[in-house]
Amino acid sequence: MKSVALLSVLMFGATALHAQQPAAPAARPAPAPLQVPNPHYVSIPMHIDVNAPVDKVWARIGKYCDIGEWGIPNCKILSGEGDFGTVRSIGNEILVAKTQYSYTYTQPVRDGVTYNLYHGTLEARALTPTTTRIFYTLLFDNSMLADDAAREKDIANRTARFTKMLGNMKILCEGGTLPPGSLAAPPVIPSATR
Image 1 (cartoon, rainbow, N blue to C red):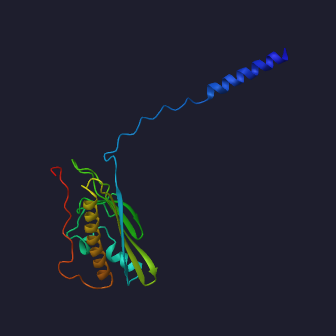
Image 2: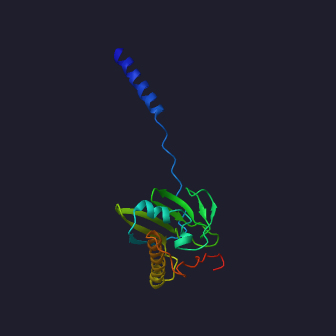
Image 3: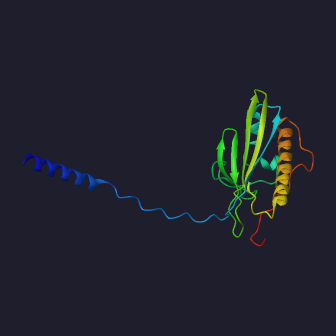
């Protein structure tokens, strides 16, 4: 009789444990297909050394619209206070990351234009108490360009343009003034009609 009672208790306990087990999670739906099925991400890392301490360098070039002085003229803050989510007038670029001596921005998705995931990062790193290395890194997908030759030409053009901006930053951080014509033309914003 004890063994029957014990068996009943064990069976009840096993049934109760089975009843408490969570149901298997429902299968997740498959993710939507990528807008660009075969992206080709490229990174363009650039840098320049400056004879000035990192605090002085970042104070001179690190505000989100300082690009108007060393890169592309007429930058204005469209929304925000210079922190996450701030939008500047150059390409409607959005600030997405920020540290003491760096920031990263992206460009918005535009109607009718394949998004290339463009991001840019500006960073200053102290090399010594009196010298700084400024980094500018671009990341984007160039798979939508016609062929390898077009991709290489695009990379070369971007590298030349941003290397010039790094040179401008160096001049300003070391106390110089830029010669006339040093700033780049505003970027061409893709339109849905292209």
